[in-house]
Amino acid sequence: MPDQARLLEALIDLVGRENVSNEPVDLIPYLRDSYAILMGRNIPLPDFVVLPETAEQVQVLVKLANDHTMPVYPRSFGVNIAGSALPYRGGLILDLKRMNRILEINEDTMTATIEPGVTWAKLRREARKKHLDIIPIGGPYQTSPVGNFLLTNITPYSTKYPADRAVTLEVVLPDGRFLRTGSQAAPFGHKLNPYFRYAYGPDLTGLFRGSLGNLGVVTKMVIRLRPLAELEENLIYGFDRLDPALQALKKIERLEISRYSLLSNRFLLTHLLTRPADLKKKSERERVSGLFTPIVMTVGLGGKPRQVALYEEMTDEEAAGLGGRRLELPPDVKADYDEFTEGCSQKVLRMYAPFSGFAAVIGCVPYGRISEVHASVKRLVLSHDLKDALTNDPLTPELIVVPYDRASTAYVEHEVLFDPLDEAAVKKVQVCLRECYQEIVMKHGAVHTMPNRSLFKLMAPEYVALLRGLKNLVDPNGLFLAGGPYSF
Image 1 (cartoon, rainbow, N blue to C red):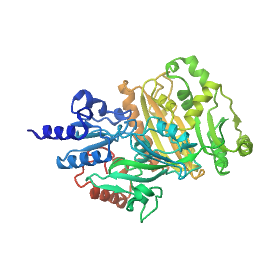
Image 2 (image 1 turned 45 degrees about the horizontal axis):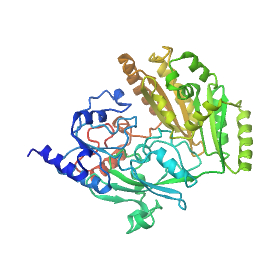
Image 3 (image 1 turned 135 degrees about the vertical axis):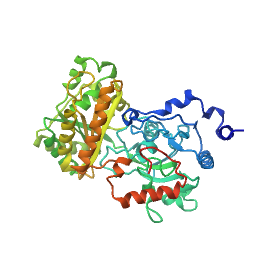
Image 4 (image 1 turned 45 degrees about the vertical axis):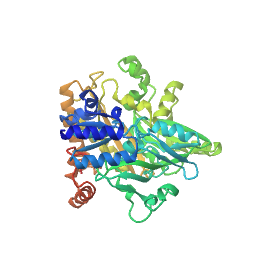
């Protein structure tokens, strides 16, 4: 029996015929994500897609892949936008969507223990039954906290809580061994007390933060939740210019009263708050755009009613002192806006409408350099004559700013939208994207939340050597993410 046929039989025996396929009709959907077109690479069909249900099945699958020297690409929902889970050398797609159990929500420790197929929406829904909530990110609601937050370093909107919500992990390493981190590492720790991250030496949970799947398959994560306040509200302020808005945001953040805060420009909000069916209607776009000023600041407050009343007064005072004014939105728009700003929103998916072409220029910088980065990106987009796919007007990048550590640094994202069927536009965006990253990194010191081989060339050799040493230690056959731009 040919080797591939024997492997197929072994996979079927392990997870059942309905959870394995080597048929092209089932494999083709795994060849792209929303960022794949910008990468300009031809992706081969994987040999198999397998949907395990347990950590033990994942372990057997990883050992089989090593026995057959077959590349492995772990994937939960494939909604990431960076091409990190595509099968660059064929091989085995580990689709983890069936591992979707919330194993525990602990009110005492304010944590949830989840598998990689749990979505943000499911976790939020179940946590709120116990008067807890997720500490959100800005990504779509149906992505996974394990895949979208932990492994890809996707960043949070909340600034009141520490940036890293991961506590402890259970991982199948690329060579098939099990690893448990933090307090789970001790005998019975994973059953009796998996709630302490900084235990027994170096922080191994942090080792997997941003690892993109290079170092193994996370089969379980303990993640922090937050208490729901008695009263929570979101305040919206309009500014005519970026710099005063940034100063107001910094002042408010340093009062240490906000649950989260962020800045965005009118172009982003017009896109996200116009219903996809209406985006091609000029009158509807103008109606939504007219609700906003050029720059919009949002501040989330929470606490007892007396607290929130005082916090609101303080926030109003700081915003007004720098030219900001409260914006009142129609109820339907305000509901969509609140969903977006609270994070993990279905509305975030509108960034792909109506043409689905989406490129992100992401850089984390000291707070005082945000304006410089914004000016650079706007100038480069203009220099490449990029056009708005809807209006054919010169394209304005969409902007979002999320402060870290009470505005000591910030996550700055510019979104460039295009029609992926317009080959000329795709080529322009590809070139513009490279130049934007080169300038914001080399000129302004911006760093990206996800490393790739291009960025590796700019990093200290000792740093890259350490990452590759860790990779070789746990993945001696070089099977995980083989051939991809995010392989260490």
